[in-house]
Amino acid sequence: MQTAEQTTNDTVQKAWKKRPLIISGPCSAETEEQVLATAQRLAATGKVDMLRAGIWKPRTKPGMFEGIGAKGLPWLQQAKKLTGLPTTVEVATGKQVEDALTFDVDVLWVGARTTVNPFSVQEVADALRGVNVPVLIKNPINPDLELWAGAVERIARSGIKDIGLIHRGFSSYGNTEYRNAPMWHLAIEMKLKHPDMPIINDPSHICGRRDILQDVMQRAVDLDYDGLMIESHIDPDNAWSDAKQQITPERLKEMLEMIIWRKEDVNSAEYHAALEKLRQQINHLDDELMQILSQRMKIAEKIGQYKKENNITILQTNRWNEIIEKALTKGEKIGLSKEFITKYFDAVHMESINHQKKVLDA
Ligand code: PEP
Ligand code: MN
Image (cartoon, rainbow, N blue to C red):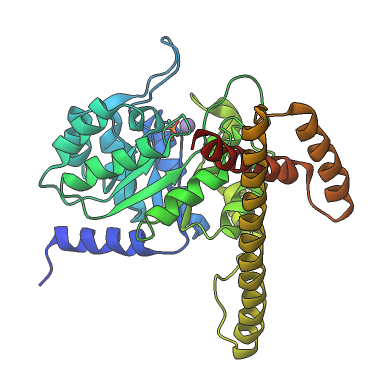
């Protein structure tokens, strides 16, 4: 016979493995009524797998609502009882881990402001020793993958087996379209480094506003994320934190229904054959490009030799500006973006300088 604890573990494991894993709930637990009503309305959508709520809120400035504290934990326990939804809460200290686990929170998450601080992550990791609970780790607020990976390692070393990543974007100075720039390439790099870990997108904190949520959600789905964490509130405009980005449970349902879910793979033989052929063409072109680049560097070395004999500097700005100008005009005509051409030529230029420098230093 199964014990009550095993039944809970099964439910949590089932949710943890569900794809896409949809986590939703308020930025902050505010009142018992708000938590219970949000949970029930989310459950009624039939589209949510896990309930989130901030209990302790790391706020930029003092005097803002800093979370209801441990007093809100029994509300989440009650919400789980009413809806069957497993719960997840942000933890930043050893005491918070202890309190959350005492009140049966099923999944813990490490917030962006904690991931940046190895002391705090280590404190959380130490409190997790010997505990069997899945942990989600948000990216640090600054675009530093090593810091994110370091937090993952600390939590893993404490013995936690189920670790997932949350991509919530990176903060930047000044006003931009996003509250936190997504920098998708960084999240993708992190996912490639940890292929065994689910990666969840948090469009709410990336966008900071409702009108671009759908686009970011779709983008995450297109990039094959394993799930979404989206903030929801029964009365978003009057939320005690992050009011601009929260949506009602019913709106969440509509938005999830609008997403076009793409499969990473289909099983048709023709599809695979066609794709394989195109991929081979790409491989072939990539090989050719490498050969050409290598030839280019050999010529650069010859130029280096010539410069050495005549005592000329490596960097000749005029010549380089000329190359870039030409490339930008040409690139535009053949469908290559300005941004790409600039990045590509900068990289080629740097490599070329390095090759020439080797000749000069020899
Ligand atoms: C949150 O999820 O409400 C939160 C505080 O997020 P982050 O750590 O991403 O800022
Ligand atoms: Mn929030």
